[in-house]
Image (cartoon, rainbow, N blue to C red):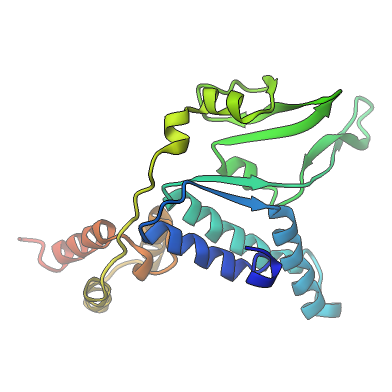
Length: 230
């Protein structure tokens, strides 16, 4: 899907991830190219909306909130997900203690790298391309290692069977489950902060985005609090 289909609108992109996570299909991989353009378009639109009121990074807040939602759906989605980002200057402190350009980094939400299992910096070296491992939670990719950038090499290290396996859809909570949770929350005293923790753990914004298993777990906890002797 391209810009005319909503590829530069976070809400539309997140809706696509939601649909791919909850329906049966034959797709294996999602590539967002580029996540930089999606993120920065959102910032630009908000900056234009705020006008003179855009101060202290206010225009970045919606884009960051959308990125958190998108990452939550990535974590729930049984597919390969690749974010392609543009590069930008990385700033730090040099040996003299002065602010200086110390290299290149990705152009997107600065916390994105922490959320990913693997982050690679792709660069050209002579006639070929290389991939430097910037961050890895995967055994096949050692931190700071440099490898030839090709699908053959990547699939060898990542696991071709993992890349090509069929995805499994998740089943979201039913309307009855959501109604029961809301009913119980009206009669059981629960700290709102605890409710938010449940949502964060589930990677969901609302109880309608919980899986049936997660919703059943919440109902069980609330029911026990309502009837502690049972």
